Length: 138
Image 1 (cartoon, helix red, strand yellow):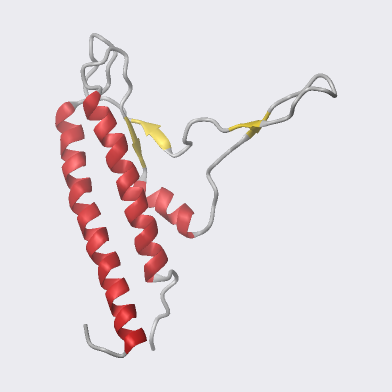
Image 2 (cartoon, helix red, strand yellow; image 1 turned 90 degrees about the horizontal axis):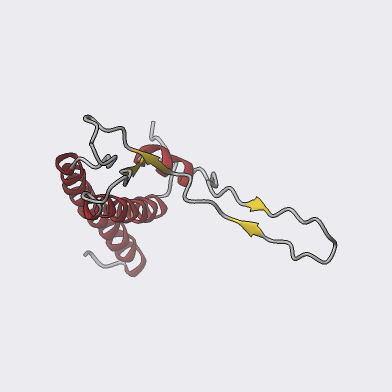
């Protein structure tokens, strides 16, 4: 009995690669601000956010601006990315900064490897589809 995959490998690979790239930016930002007083380290729950993206669940919670007069312009404000979480520090810092450079560098390195894997996976998926379309072995 063959199990049918729940997600298309191409859309899964695309979503995973985009999310890995975004996480790399967040972790890089943490590292860049490791000496900034009161900076709070951020990260995302990769598995949860990827699952929500693949299921089509939107995380953008736009807020409608209140108007008090009929001639006021209506609009919306999108708050900061709701997927970003604050990292709980292992040891409090005197200047209020929660970045632990060792943890951030470790997570940055692991995410780099996973990003390369996602890129390889996506490339293989595209190559196999091109092979199927053209009828030529890759």
